Length: 248
Image (cartoon, rainbow, N blue to C red; front, side, top):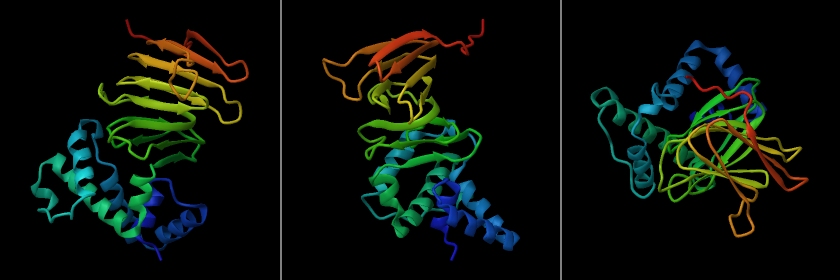
């Protein structure tokens, strides 16, 4: 049976190979099925995500986890931001009823890219992530509540939503990257353990340890800088990113 929770997993790239095959067969069976999937996709992918009020959405998610969801007016009668929030409510109702809510929000969410092209994801704090092929990130359990922390394997470009009171942290291999709001990329292949951090804009702190203490070495990186960590040598080097381009 094809259910909406399964279709949401399919759209989010979380479905297994067997589930993907089932959904694809279901889509081919009836054009109405594809129309239904497109409606669910519209809920998850609202145009102009960067303009959304992320603080409002985040507060609503935290509140709705503690109280019953109330009925709302039809979407067409509400402002655009409220339409997105109510769409999120519809998604959460399905997730709660299916048990997926606890996987996505209590245990942290995993974003995977199994395709051969870069895929874009919008995190709950408003940060845009461009995830490279064969890469994945996982958010912390309390992401966008007390901490903004993600773990990465592979390659990703982060366009971080500024929030000086809640730094954005990336754990990659043995290293830690910390920013408040900037654009940077992280390359952390699992096999070698080497980590590269390239900064497009803003300032980044690059540590040679996931735990920040007196023994951790910290490197500051600015636009055009690249930090490279070698696990075999426990060494960090700073150079210029040959691919960095700054308009005059």
